[in-house]
Length: 276
Image (cartoon, rainbow, N blue to C red; front, side, top):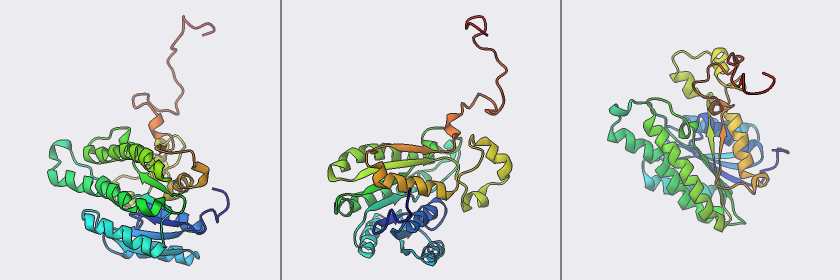
């Protein structure tokens, strides 16, 4: 991103910034000089920790609550955050919930809850913030999708569907809002190690599991924060409607190709290609 003051004077709202990727994104923008509105969906403790860390490092931040199942609260968040910040330059739509459930056991309640939080709230929060984002020369929106939009994992039908919807929403919103000077892009993270993983995974071994990622390590929220800042910056002024996969090469590997680190023992082309 260059100099640490590249976002000095900028105003940023990060949803779901009380933990995980959202917290990492909020801290990166604050470290780069932005004033940050930190959204949280449940209890305030995580958001307060995010705000405290930003302020301890000399940054400016405040926490804002909104239940993303309630559109009235979503719209109230838009008003409260822009009032605190005095406008808005960057919206990072990060808030989302993961659910794994076999397809045949997925209920209407599961479906509605995930679609409400993961895509409906994003849609209408962005809509409410268009006037603020389009003022002062235009701003940027960065949506958090997932590699689940591009590759399948069992028991994630609803979650993957919401993330696919985010990719499509990003593409179309980008061409509409470009007319108002607002760019819209998305990030599709792969495995990013967060508190949620450490609480949920039953057999996690970082040294072992890192070998499943071609770059040789599991990403951190900081990595997504850096990409979000790039997409929101003038350096990305010609990037619009794109979903950037940030997964250390996970989706580059063919599922049935075996260990990508092992040499290939097959001799395809022998007898046909000269020199084999």
